[in-house]
Image (cartoon, rainbow, N blue to C red; front, side, top):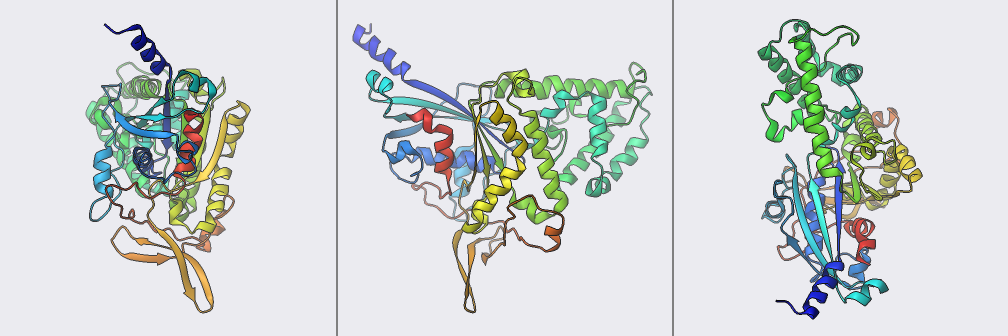
Length: 458
């Protein structure tokens, strides 16, 4: 049996434990997997390296160390941290595989508290940190919870212009052959759903971000299930729907997708989050073109509209999250020269302005930064005659060493003329080489960690 003194000590240690869950949010290719890998890597090295000067607890040498812990949810796969590190620290570093399903990782951070109330109880405290990773495409399904099948179908047809309309032609041709009021033909519905899914994949390949339903392009364990075999269609919502018809089946599958897939996922994972970081890749769309950039902005606007944190917001209404801090981060800051970082932050602020206003009104703290979770380039200068031009140097994805000046990042949302002038040239680079016993190189990960965790480590 434990002595009274041991019982008291155990109680004090339990009372010094705290817990935080971080929602890492971002559209596809925004860098969620790289961010989580770097976050874990940086914290695991806090006891031996001093690479996080902007994280006050490490700067003050109050962090004793960090370790990985078994996750509490045994039904969710573990985040593939070890596999990601193998990719990053190989003889030829490569980016980790992008997220294809939900996963989770948990850390414990032991630190010396500086709050008087905590110091009186114990000389050390522990912060347990849970991070959930999931495909960015799945985020795009959240607005479906506010739309019935007719409204969602109409939104998809309204979006058909420019590239989308061209890419949608095979699906629209197949759709014209479907007798919506006819007796259900599951083979026909499956065939048209596959063509619609191919259309969504084609949109992604062309740099368009808004693809719905998101599970169609990354189905996870639902691949081949009838709940993923529906598609938008044109019909009169006031018209009586025949039972056992194609239209009745499509509506039923859409409703099942809403409740059993979308709502279940967000209720299970988002109801317990304390902090949120929204990762945004502003650079790739700048490179792709006006339509891609505006599509990304529209996707982000609709996503953040769904994440309204007030009483009337969908997330609050459905899941009652406890989020009290949101950080917007422009990723891949190492892919532009340092003097452009302020422009990158300014551009991101313009893009998220409506969400910022809403959250501020609800007394939720918000901030914007530029960062690179895992550094891919070094900075320098190119000499041209008597001039020195700022440049970045790295290895391209094809393995070619490059020194380039990418150009200027616009401070404000650009007009279509911006792309006619070709003011920016984005080049994707491989991650920089790093040693196995060294933390990954980064830009402002410590600033992100201070914002998300700093007050929890006091």
